[in-house]
Length: 74
Image 1 (cartoon, rainbow, N blue to C red):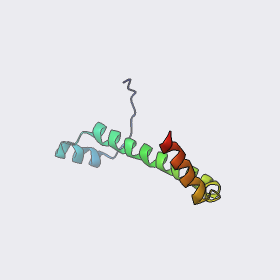
Image 2: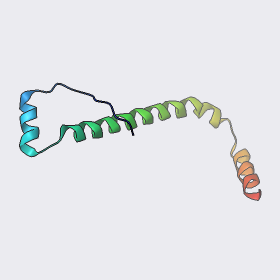
Image 3: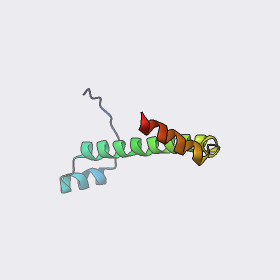
Image 4: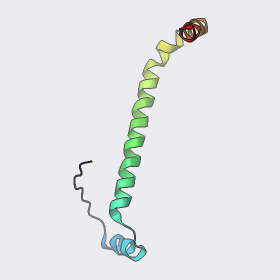
């Protein structure tokens, strides 16, 4: 995996607290960024799901059942 550097300015008080508790900022930042990306991806998926909802609503349950049965038989 290739890495790049990201920097952020924080108040000195926060930096002192991080040092005091032995917290590594890079780990916290990395975790927060992964979480933010995950949430953004979920928001995108929800938006896509809402867009196809009217289309899916038009498909009858009989068609779905028939399709599932056909797939199982193959």
